Length: 81
Image (cartoon, rainbow, N blue to C red):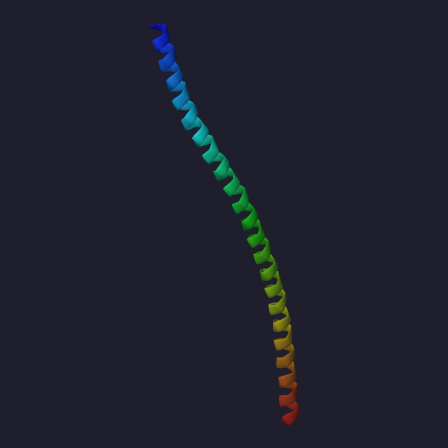
């Protein structure tokens, strides 16, 4: 009787161990994927920030150039009259 209980206990532990091992492997894969995704997201965020800052600088330059152009056009209009 004791041998039968040991065999059943061994089989149950083996089954639990198998599923536990599978679950742990899946968790490792998910963790690795999360790390890769975080790294890629940081690259995309950095790229976006750089492009936005660059675009903002260009828009500021464009604003200044348009303002200067408007002033010149007004001066030319005054000269024409």
